[in-house]
Length: 292
Ligand code: SAM
Image: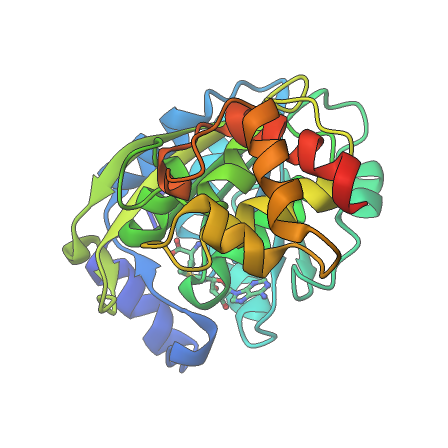
């Protein structure tokens, strides 16, 4: 096995050799601890029959661990300067394809068809750029890609919001949007010392495994998400007050909201953060009858 990229010395050597400086604006915090990489990759439960998709390979620290465990790795990197670096650092591996692209603009489905044909088990594994973690996760979930799930490093605070349960401070519309599609769990908390440079915020790794069906059956997904977002618009307000602002204008609006709440057996004085995702699903379906 070749020497790990993810050590402080090797990372500094690679950066010096290629005259590379980090771009903070692209969220470049490279991992320099092979133990944390082994733990991240372990969370994805890969075999040689699996493929991995990585967002932002950087100088290849995580990529090479994925290449050792998976049959194939497909990585998307936005920073052109890193392409020759990756060519160099990943030269011992013949099962990696790098695509130079902003993941948010990439046609990931087409890339999977082209690069990962024949792989039935595909996991996204990434140390995400922190300035765009939520849009990346939502894109990969909403595009209905043939993936089993995601194991990603991100800001601890966002990790807590994504995995939060009802009745907690971190629970909100982001928890619901992600848990509607996946079983999301906190996997690891990670010290700042494993990065170069160290980020300003604490980090964590979460595991999101896609559900065969969304958690609740809703008549209209967009409307369901409108209801959940409105219900948390002002966290200290009751669900009734928030919905009065969030639902479209119309005659007898308050009465209709009260009626839907009663039909869903939800006390209008409750706050959004106390409602389970199942309750939100039921409520959205009842409100749909009056407001759509
Ligand atoms: N995987 C490497 C590691 O763990 O050491 C680097 C992770 S670093 C936190 C994030 C990486 O994502 C950087 O290489 C950065 O250039 C890249 N990146 C930032 N925005 C991106 C985007 N929109 N699409 C693809 N890659 C992006």
